[in-house]
Image (cartoon, rainbow, N blue to C red):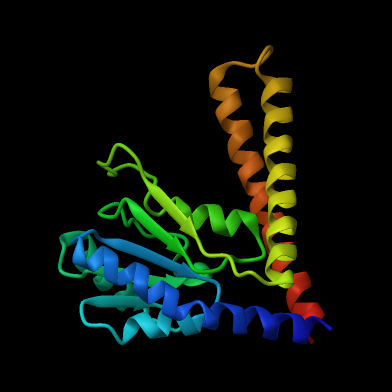
Length: 201
């Protein structure tokens, strides 16, 4: 059942905490700022117990979120962690060039939005590193295959639209088409989330 499926995913995320802490400690020792994302709260809460870390969850007030982001960007925090849905949009975390994804959301668009928190205007690093944690567990392999399949489908749709419009449309119209496509992908992500909530009832 879906509830059991979700429970196992949460347990897998929690089981990664010791390995996550090791990666965090290596970044702290090297004085390299790190952004950590998880689809589940437990890994984020574990980092909230560390000195010099800020965390953003769904119930974090807006003003506090902004203050945490500003503290991280100014260098006052060693790192910042949040759930993908709570911290994955609307913030800039370009002080870090390294990101750790403890586990992923079901919706590829949300995962990509999270990655874009460090891959945006203001990023001064010549390269960024995204590390995804994966468990040696049949369920985690299944989730990864589903997400890769969804990502490939989205990439294919984007390329098809771009190829269809490129020869006949002016650059300004192509930009508008990309925005429309992003809106459609956001709508699909919302439908996926709604379907997941419905299945969990």
